[in-house]
Every structure is written in C-alpha cells, then in structure tokens.
Image 1 (cartoon, one colour):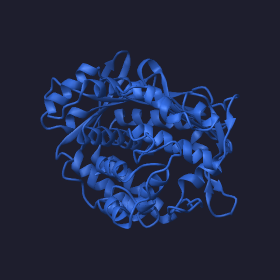
Image 2 (tube, helix red, strand yellow; image 1 turned 90 degrees about the vertical axis):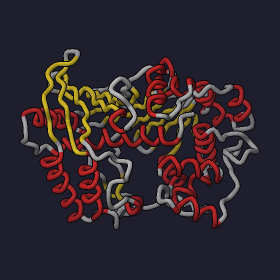
Image 3 (spheres, helix red, strand yellow; image 1 turned 135 degrees about the vertical axis):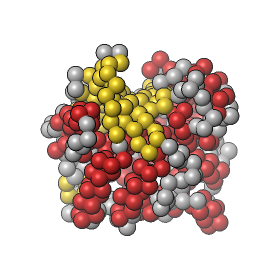
Image 4 (cartoon, one colour; image 1 turned 60 degrees about the vertical axis):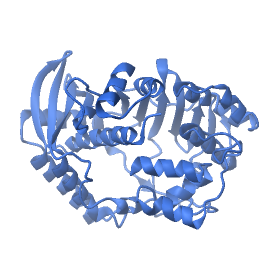
Length: 415
C-alpha cells in the first residue's frame, strides 16, 4: 500500500483544492474579470436543484509510480493501479435551489436537522467503474451497499478472503457486502456514529455556532479572498475556459486557521487546529486550475507535485474534481432489505475492516461480529495525544471493530 506520507499528501491536497476553490463562492471578488467568472460559476451551482462532484487522481498507474520514485515515496504497482482507478463521487438533489437549503429544528426543538427535501449520495468506484461502496440518504431513510471482494481485488488481495469474512453474517448483511442494498433509519446511523463512550448509545447533538462568530468567519473569508488569491485567465483548454487561481501557501493556511479559530469553542474537532501552518506546508505560491464550460464550473485540478520538493516538472500528479449540475435526482432503491441498529453497527464494522485491511475474524480487527478488543485507558491516551483524532472518534472506531493498531495507523495518516 502507499506509504503514510504519500497518503497524507493526497488527502491534504484534495481537501485544500476543495477549500480554496470553494472560497470563490463568497461572490464578492472584484480583482479581475477572471475572478468574477469563477465566482459566478460557483453561484450557478447553488442556484441548481442538483449537484454532483467526482474526485480522482488524473494520472495513469505508470505516472503515479514515476511520481513516487521522483519523490522518494515508493508506490507499488497495486497501489498505483488502485489510485489511478478509484473515484469518489458525491451527489445532492432537492426540490428547491441548493443555496436555499437550511437546517431545521430537530425533534427536541434545539438540535438542527437536515432539510428533508435534500437527498444525497456518496459512492466509491474502482477499475472500470465497478462499485465498491455507496451510501444514500432520502428523507428519513438511508441505504447502503458495498463490495468487499471488490476492495480486495482493488488492492491486489485474494477476494476469497471476503467470502470467508462474511460467511457467518446474517443474510441481509452478507448481501450488503456483496453489492445488495440494505435500508435503515437515519436516526440509527446517528446513534451508531454519535456515541461518546464505548458503551454509549445516544446521538451527539450537532454543534450550534455563535451567529457573531459565523458572521466574522464570512467577513474573514471575503478578506482572504481579496488579499490572498489571484486569478488569471489562461484562455481555452480542450474547449473550456481555464482560469488559474494562485495563493501563497503558508500565508493562506495561516489566514484560514486564524479565520476558523473563533469557532473552536463551538465545534470540538476544530479545537485541535494548529495555530500556524504545519512545517510541511511549502513557503511558496501554489496554483490550481478552474475549468469553465459555458460559464458553468466544469472541473478543478491541482498538481500534487507542487507540494513535493523533489518532484520535477516532468513528474506531475494532478488531482481532479469534476463538477456537474442538473444531475439526476438521488432516488431510494426499490429492493433494499431493512436492518436495525445492531446490524448496522456490524455492517459498518465490516466495511471499516475492509478499508483498513483488518477485517479478519480473530485478528483483532473487524471480525464477523464487527468487534475488537476494548481499548485500555493508556491506549486511548496514546491515540489521542497527537491531536489527529478525538476521544469520541477513537471510541467509535473501536466500537465499529477497529483494533488499537488499526486506529494507530489511522491517526498516523492524519498527523
């Protein structure tokens, strides 16, 4: 598999790409006509009733291997082929413009709840578009399916192991891990994912933001947009308008961290944000390309080679986010088998085990019941010491079947 630093770089760059381009949605940039075009393109997405985005590494397996060799991060053939093939897709749809979607009061009157008119889908696909995992939410029900054997093939493992892993599961769960739909209530997902302790079963309340802090964040982002980002029209590329957005990496990171700092008291996970840019953020300008088709946002690309000191101009590794509007509405599958909260916890444990490579019964990973050895107080303290994971996250991962070593590896990826 890919070494930790290569994985971390990929995740960080993908998140930075989404964040930097998303800032243009503020709609107040007046620097250049190119900036206005980008702002208008994001505004069009908000006025649509549906939206889709697909994240991928826009390179061949050979190019990915070459990038690893150039940067000293050896990437084996199986990992390179998996990276070249995998796609992460997100889709949203509603009966009104997406910009008008607002959280509503929950059943207890004080916890924000999602607008029931909003439906969503997240899907991971592999080679040839083969489905690996998909989660949909329509109204108060969620739907999931996965292909553990497909995961195994993607990373060069024997898919027969997936059959062994799932043989003792109840019928609906076996089906869900072989690509068949299961359905469950969204409240069960919240209860499964919101435990504050190893034995807790209550949903964590959603954070409530201070309106003044939110207004301050908006003002800060607008200021950052005006002072940190520059926009340059580069003409046509494959029939689409290409606009390059450039920013000083360390200054942009510092300014963003400062902008979000007032919210840390309302959002627990933000309390772990550093005060200044991490030392591996380069002290130089970074650029990404925004492609427009007829004034609409088509794609955003970011070359990871910009983050690697050793990468030369001949070893690019672009990450691409392709956007779409007016996508088909997210629909509830008609043939889904209903499962309860206990089966849901087991299903998530098996999927987690498949993603981390720990899903073998008796190995301390996600076994047939989605269980793992409980963490000791010392292990819990160690896993949260670096700040990459909160105690709530660590307890949840352990409850879903991840062992101490699994979670340690996950924390290392985010550090």
